[in-house]
Amino acid sequence: MDVNHTTTVSQTEALNLRYGDGGEPAPGPWNEVIATLLSHRSVRGFRPDALPQGTLETLVAAAQSASTSSNLQTWSVVSVTDPAKKAALAKIASNQKHIEQCPLFLVWLADVSRNERLGLAEKVTLETIPHFESYLVAAIDATLAAQNATVAAESLGLSMVYIGAMRNNPVEVSRLLGLPPGAMGLFGMCVGYPLPTVTNEVKPRLPQSAILYHDTYDTATEAADRAAYDARMAAFSQRHEMTQDTWTKRVIGRMGKIAAMSGRDKLVSILNGMGFPLR
Amino acid sequence: MDVNHTTTVSQTEALNLRYGDGGEPAPGPWNEVIATLLSHRSVRGFRPDALPQGTLETLVAAAQSASTSSNLQTWSVVSVTDPAKKAALAKIASNQKHIEQCPLFLVWLADVSRNERLGLAEKVTLETIPHFESYLVAAIDATLAAQNATVAAESLGLSMVYIGAMRNNPVEVSRLLGLPPGAMGLFGMCVGYPLPTVTNEVKPRLPQSAILYHDTYDTATEAADRAAYDARMAAFSQRHEMTQDTWTKRVIGRMGKIAAMSGRDKLVSILNGMGFPLR
Image (cartoon, rainbow over the protein chains, first blue to last red):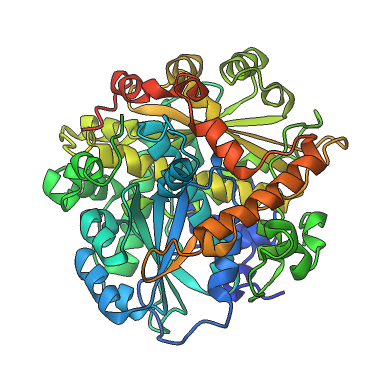
């Protein structure tokens, strides 16, 4: 079994890394698949080494094995290897160099166009396609698929990072990849072997009591959970980024001002122009 | 290692089950994690047996280990065990009995409300929250999390099915679970041990040439791919459901008429009323 060596940390250690001291849930069932999932960390520096033959097809087989709403399969994926296109995509993503660097760059599409072409070929109007719900299903299906590809990649000792910044300019992504109306780049994904200089640690998350509710939504512990998490994230960012940012400060920095959206505040009208009426 | 016994099929057999005779991609790298992913099938009949202690917490730890855009963590999950609530949720989902039957029913939330409360507590307006992009990020984050929980559950020998029908009536889901504005049930998930009478097979998907593109979107093989897949799906549905439905026929049945949306054609105005302006 060819599982990433980073998954050999113990259950106790894996939970400690993911939640930080004092944030760990009680340990439950465990196996190496779960250890692989817990050890995820996003990587933004890749060796140029090519991936083993057939890796892309294995990742796509994993992706296609995820659930898809009513088997509609309203998603696609574009594997980008053309250096000029990778450079242009990196530029859209505020010059994230790892897009050019990684041996495999995937753009995951919310794509109702295939089913639309089916309707056209069969001379049947598919009334549901212009609806917001159809876009949402396509986005959910693309995401389920992409996450299975992520798990498969990490199980093979590869690293990855999602690139939400494809949404900074969906029209240009569409032009570069020749997408038809009804298809859009939902996010990108860099895949490759991490540079030896990349040493980023598993990032702690909110304690489970701030995310998991029982029968009824309940914010009773939220203020205390956030204070504890802020302290853990400040320590984490001091260890790794030479800052002392709390989660609170990061959320405000990211969600506070429209300028932080890099153009994504216009997404509705952009999608409307790309064949998604979002009715 | 406690991996589901269904993962012990060979690579050749797994690819054949997933794509059908003649639809298989060339075999690439392989391991037991990938075999677990390929062996996924949705299950709609569950034994009442309780899950091992700590299973929920392990699934949530896997879920929280998935990527989340800028670490915003704009998702939550409600574990529903109250039989009255499960019955009410089953009713919303057109009486899907497995919602009542399964020992663990999870409702995954797109949830910007936690971050909104953070802004309120810190006396900072988070300008980005009313935007469509923030809803989309929340939906993507909830889906990444849920799919990790799925992989973890299946690795433990459990089965699951997603319940998109939570979106048939998001307002009632919200009322039942006490959700605040800015949180909505994106989909449900049944988890449990499959009934011994449940014998559903891995469902074939479109051939990779219909889903995976290289540098440029390309529909050259699409008509032939769909014809071949229609034949495979007709054979599959004859083996399992005593019908002979092609994929084409299923897509038209599901996407053709607004009536098939079970109320989800109103989703934009419903979300607007739930604290998502989708600006």
